[in-house]
Length: 541
Image (cartoon, rainbow, N blue to C red):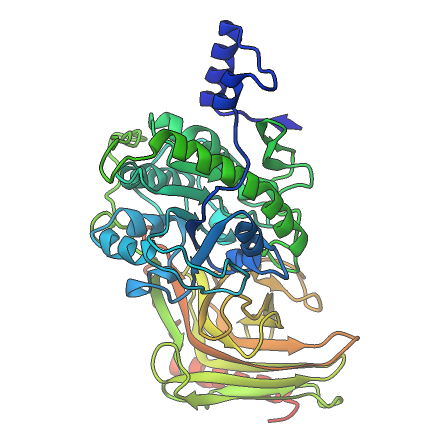
């Protein structure tokens, strides 16, 4: 096991050693320098910017963070999907923090954030609002932000989206806002780890930089910014970021991936409760340190200049921007189906040897973008299966996109389903799936889901089982599948809308057309093959 201590703390230890300071109980000097893990004496208003992992963390029956904060005299409010001006609550990826804290709309967003006193998730909180603005702002990106591309030692860069260099750049930039508001305490909660090890080394390196070096590299002198390494706490049972017997322990092992899985990349109840136990005393330490050093300062006092990004090349790439330095969000490169024209091209396939049933049809007035979505009602018998599938008239070329995206609304949370992509030819069908669960974070509304190419895997009963989906020019269909295990049946409903291909703004453009053209005779043969394929698949129409 390795333990990391920030350079600021290392310098403090050396100075104390050279001065011969003796830390004994009851020593007045010790009382002034020691960390204080006790709750605030008076109620402090706090707001948490989060999505699904944060909601689970807050819930009484899961992570217990809301109740724990209440027990420590914090009055907690939170944001979630759909919150705030311009629905800014939808956007919590690392690059989005510039929009929150460094754009021409920042004042509008912060006015709403500082004055928010409502709940957007279910948890126990103190019954009485003490009034006034929120004093503490917690903010967290979700686990997809641990898939940072680039290299572990990349320098800050204004270019990119989810990369190590651009993530460093974003956090350096938003320090300018934090330094101008010493009367607020901003606490970064690092994004939780993924189960996939592809970018785990990058995630580890970035979160170490954020926890240990970010503030020092920018010569940040105030105490109104702190970091809790949520990522690290969830990578191993013996990995910690906590107050421990008079000091702050930041220790980790050799594992860089999620050690507390729940069936997907949301941290489990056990992992979330571990994080609660470690975070709350540390938050108390952050709070008392901030109060001791910045109490009485007003907005604008103590503002500091942040360090410019280090040059990585003599001719840096131009920065794509959404205005006021805000990186552009992902772009839609191909709209596959928004259901405004109905759902006649979607078909039902299921196992007729059981009592399984499934219907999928366009439904008016339920869409996320527009007025129509695809409603799927299913009742899957024990051991049964069913799919709602669209086979395209001609093969589609998906090589211009970086991932598949769709919006989903569910009748109930935590229900399993499969995203299905059909590729190849009608003669040699390739079926790729990704197992998902209906959203736990916001079952009342639509949630954007993404399926990365690396997460779509070839089914086990076909050749090259478990091979990764390639951005194929021969995508012939898409579907949503449901199956029940051997223990119990599954019955529920979901709504799907706005199925699309997306890419990040800096993704290299592909000049291929969105669909592969076939000669007239080839088109007729393909259509005939699709009709045959549907007949082979169909159990009940």
